[in-house]
Length: 450
Ligand code: NHF
Image 1 (tube, rainbow, N blue to C red):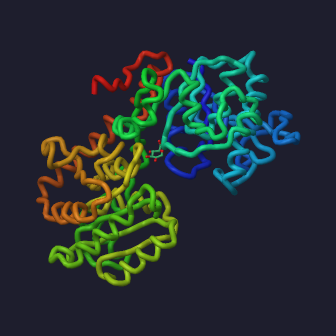
Image 2 (cartoon, helix red, strand yellow):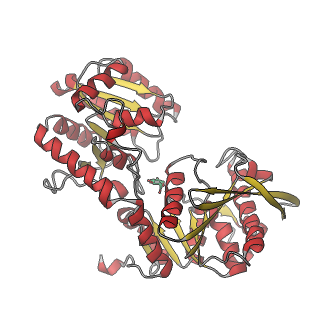
């Protein structure tokens, strides 16, 4: 098939997990014999060779859009620059500027399609997340192509209707404030999201498109997250743990790690900090070590530092950016990775951990619930532990329980986890399912069959 992919992030441009997902899907589709073309804003990166330009009128002026093209692992990537499309901050510098960027991207996408249509007529347009809503609407309007809209994370924000007028999509904006991800879902042929549990957790949104909604799990590429590539691959795991803890100035103990954004809306570092405070009065605490990696909200950073200062023998907070190799070394050395998210459409950390034999302890939400098999529910196939979200006491209890697990159980959890990450959640599986979605030959989320 000929697939046109639309996305605001495409590697090497990366803000979060979105870049990894869109790129892996595009490349995976190529491996399965599809022709894949990507349209993405250039975000001031100047990637690829300039092949032409398009004049677009938007917001009362004429913008000269530069079209660059590169081939990246079999995928033809067109990046659109000029005006706000060259703004370095992918989702900035302000909400208004970003909204204008999404409109400009949509209009430029039509210009580019006009140039390509005689040589590349897509069978399907695959749009990722709401930033591509205007592009999707316009491509649908002018070229009538079948389309799929994938939600990686709901944004749940409204934008003023005049943006739709400005995008030449007045017919999609009958009210003053419009939710663009709702509009995208409304006009597209199929709507997907990245895990089954997230779909049902957000059914209030997805029910609006009942009949054309399904999930496609993301995957993980274990070729990088691979134990054989560790610096100390030849040493036993306990030995590696000792070395890594020492590197962070900690003596040996059961090691728990958190890696992620310090935010108040999703990643739940506050739940972990609270759990550590609760644990500090437990006798088990003296043998527990916590490495907390991330940054973001200044209040949460200050709280994390305060916890570190209070328990310098047990807690390390790392706010500087670590190389992927260092993160790999950590996954391959610590005992547990804690993912206390309030919600998680799919999540990558738990699978990266599983690839490298770290046992995940995650909130029972979204993709975490779908990828981690809980020890208390299915001991034979378990890959980790699930705890209720936003519950510091439950997390504290789970961490003490984890600390006491015997070697044999730990070995089984690791083994199962590795298998699950490398066999069940591959990008190839994801792409095969997307191909069925493109053809409409896929099961749907049916509320009365739940
Ligand atoms: O993995 C890519 C990513 C997900 O859970 C993640 C998220 C955003 O929040 O699909 O998108």
